[in-house]
Image (cartoon, rainbow, N blue to C red; front, side, top):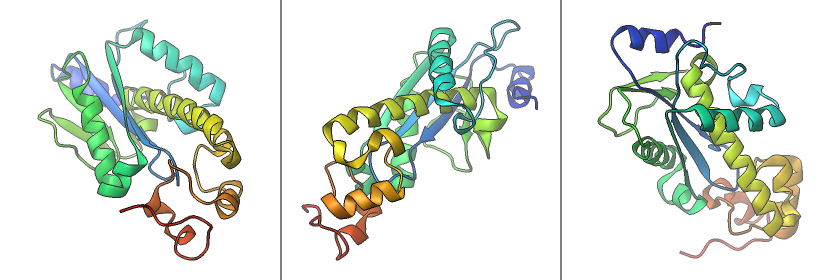
Amino acid sequence: MDKLFYEREMLALGAQYIAGADEVGRGPLAGPVVCAAVIMTLGRGELIEGIDDSKKVKEGERVRLAALIRERAVAWAICEEDNHTIDRLNILEATKKCMKRAVESLAVEPDILFLDGNFRIDVSLPQQSIIHGDALSYSIGAASILAKVYRDELMKQYAEIYPQYGFEKHKGYGTKVHTDAIREYGLCEIHRRTFTRKFWEGEGKSSPPNT
C-alpha cells in the first residue's frame, strides 16, 4: 500500500507543507479527546518506516515512532479537550474544536490539511477528509501515533490519581473491568457524564453531576 498516494498528489500540485490531523479518544467513558496535527518531511531518505494507524502498532513501537516523529517533523502539535467540554458540546463538536486548536497551533502553516474521517473543521486552510486516513495517509498515520501515545500516557497518570478504575489498562474505554469499577465506586472527576448516564440514573453509586 502506498501511504504517500495522497501526499504525492498534493506535492504534484505544488504543495510544500502537508499536515495530517487525527484524534484519539472519541469512544471512552473517561478522559479527554486528544488531537494531533503534524507536518512531516517527505523527502527520499527522510521517511519513517512503520508509520500506520496507531491501533495497528504495538505500544512499545508506537512510543518509539512517536519520538522519531517529533524529532523529524517540520512541525507538530497536540491538544486535548476534557470530559467537561465533551459533556457540554458533545463528542463530535469537542473533537472538531480540539482538532482546530491542534492545526492552528502548528508553528508552520501547511498548504493543505488531511483529516481522518468524513468531517471538516473550521479553518481557512484547504482540507481533504480521508476515510480510514490513519491507515492510508503517512501524514495522518503520524498524527494518530502522536495522539495515541500522548493520551495513553495521560491515562496512566490518571490511573495514579484514581487507581480503583484501572485506567492504565483500558485507557478509559468501557471494558467490563471499567464498568464493574464504576458500579462499585461510582464516577470520578474525569468520567464523561453524557457517556455514563446509566450509572447515575439508577444503576450506579454515583450522583448526577453538579449543574
